Amino acid sequence: MVNKNKITLCKTLKDVEENIQGEPFFRVHQSHLINTNFIDKIIKAETPYIVLKDGVTVNISRHKKEAFFDFFRKL
Image (cartoon, rainbow, N blue to C red; front, side, top):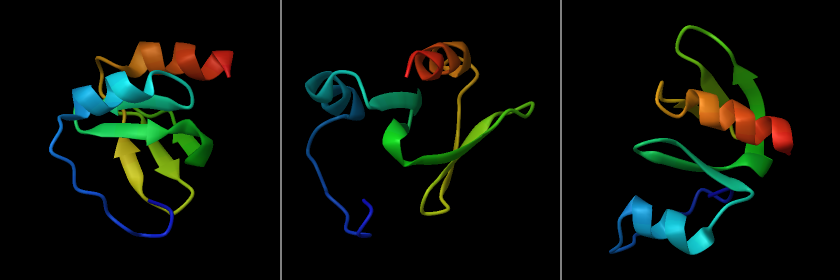
């Protein structure tokens, strides 16, 4: 969260992903669902990753990489 608060849910990330359905959210990794409005940089390295506006880095999984870049091009 931008304000550094945390939310604890009794749901899986898959359940959350299904409830918010689509833009501006994208699941870039098994453990990470991000709001694409808060991306500061995308680093296209051997293992690509995202730097969020608060400085947090999130790896893009190799299985999600192509879908993420396709999604991002459409924004």
